[in-house]
Length: 191
Length: 175
Image (cartoon, rainbow over all chains, first blue to last red; front, side, top):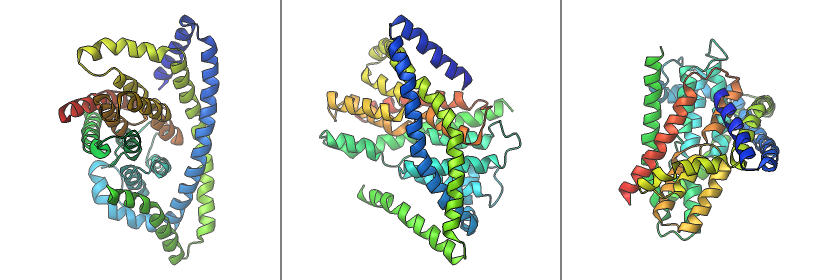
């Protein structure tokens, strides 16, 4: 991330000098700061909401029941998570929220999953294989129906707006398989 | 389609009702419990904020400085040779960086090329099958304070590129 951030900032400054867009550059970093505040305020609401709900699930013991229910599916991929660990449930809930396109629930539950995975981490500043696997699956955008995209296509009078569903699912599965495969390959190489 | 839509609408209300009802049945003080959990949420978001700030500033200035347009020009030749509409490139580059910006670019593509054009189809599949990678990385890694990401970021970037190639390939095959 350090390299990428340095690259983006440096390239942006150089380009704004060449293109005579220094004003735009300065304006854009304040714009970016404003967006960060707006997004964080939005996150503050939904993350607090969902962490409130998941706390109820934890204290009532429901989370352990759900964990044992979902364990067969998750443990095939996430081999190092102990039986009945809360991470099983939070990972599953995040995946389900993603599948149904519930972005507002997926992000908070994903944060919860990262916290649960962190509790299993010996070196708290280094990402574990399980964390990387979780993030890689999330960045592959596992969604059954892309509602927003279909909505826009329909709005502009597409003859068959849901025609994109099948290609989208196929593309998602293939790219997710590629990403997870690459991760497991890297794990073998860098062990 | 409508069944999936209905399930999507039902899933959150049913889940919340079940969580609260089960809590009451197990004699959990649900209100106090919810507030305690929500308080954790506030701490987490405060922790994420600096990471989001760093990403948003970098992405916005990259667009504003003209560096984004230059990147597009770099790939223009390649896309022309492969007979892929050049507008697809905008979506391909912007999607991993910004969710709202990519939605704007997508809407514009649908408006200008028509909703049933090859360009719109490819863009739609990329919109649905790619994720705002940098945002996800910033939020999830920031939430737990991970600094050493090992090979994670490289894998995410390579997968983004491969994902876009897959999306283009599939649409060209289907339509």
